[in-house]
Image 1 (spheres, rainbow, N blue to C red):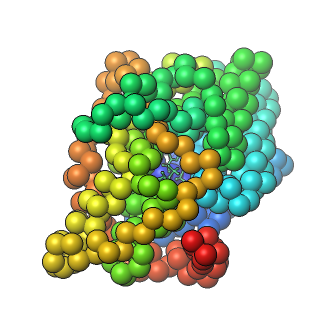
Image 2 (image 1 turned 90 degrees about the vertical axis):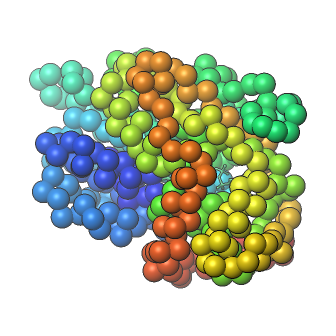
Length: 358
Ligand code: NAD
Ligand code: TYD
C-alpha cells in the first residue's frame, strides 16, 4: 500500500488487515501534511502490518523496498489530492502524482521481471479519481438528482481541468502504458468524492463541520451550484479490496454512489446536523454561509456510472448519504483532538493565505 496514512489509505489498510489476516501489509507513506499515523493507531501493533516512511519519487528507495519486502501486489494511493493546493503549487502535484507513480511502476516492473515467475500472480492497482474525465453539464430540472443526462463511464474521454486532475490523468496513462508496453498486470479504478472519518479538514465536508462547530464562516465557491457524487470512505475501501482480488487485469472500473448533491444543499444539511448534535436551535449557524470568489477552473458536475463494478462484481454502496453524514459529523465532534492535531502549524498558515482577501 502507498499513501496508507492518508484519508482513504488508512481505511483501506484497516479493511485489508481485518479481512486478510494472512497477508503481510507494508504501508509506504511519506507522511506529508496529509499523512497521519494517528489514523492507524488501532492497527499499528498487528503482527502482519509494517509502516515504512518513504517518498514514492525516490526510485532507488522504491527498488530496495520492493525486494526487501518481496512485494507481489501494490495498491497505490499516495498522491497530492487537494485541487486548491494544485492551483497554487502545480509542480508538487506533477512530482508526486506523475513522477512518483512512474518511479513506483518502474521499480515494480524491474523487481517482478527479476523473479523466476515474472509477472505471474502480481498486480499493480492504481487508485484514481473521476476528476480525470472533466466536467459534466447541469441540464436536468433541479430536483431530484441526477442533475444532468450524462454520467462518467469507463470509456469517457479524459478531459482534466485542474493541475490535480491533469496529474492524476497523466499517472493513469503511465499505468496503462506499462500494461500495453511491458505486459505489466494493472488495474485502475476511478472513484467519486469520498467523505467520512479522518479526512483532512481542508476538503469541503470536514472543513465545514469544523467551522460550524467553531462559528467560523463557510466559504462557498461561486453560487454553490456545483455537483459532486459522494461515497462513504468505507464503501470505497471495500470496493478496493474487491477489485484487488477480483478485477480483470488491464481493466478500469468506476466507483461511485449514484449520489449527486449540490454543494449548497450539503452545506445546509451539515448545518442542520451539526447544530442538532450540539443542542443548538434550528437555524443557529445559517448566517455562517458566505459566498466567495469561485475556484479557478471549477468543474460544474461530477457523476459516476458504476454499473460495470455492480454487474461484474456485485458491489454496491452500503450507506445512504444522510446516514453516512451523521456518522461523519459524530466522528468529527467526538475527535476534536485529531482535528487540532492535524490543523496546527503549517496548516494554519496555508488556511490564512487561502482565505484571506476573499
Ligand atoms: P490524502 O491527501 O488524504 O492522503 C494522501 C497520502 O499520500 C498521505 O498519507 C500522504 O502522506 C501520502 N503521500 C503524499 N505524497 C507522497 C509521496 N511523495 N510519497 C509517499 N507518500 C506520499 O488523499 P486521499 O483523499 O486519501 O486520496 C488517496 C488517493 O485516492 C489519491 O490517489 C487520490 O487521488 C484518490 N482519490 C481520492 C478521492 C477523494 O475524494 N479524497 C476520490 C477519488 C480518488
Ligand atoms: P473538495 O472537497 O475540495 O473536493 P473536489 O474539489 O475534489 O471535488 O470540494 C468539493 C466541492 O466543494 C467543490 O465543488 C468545491 C467546493 N468547496 C467550496 O465551495 N468551499 C470550500 O471551502 C471547499 C474546500 C470546497
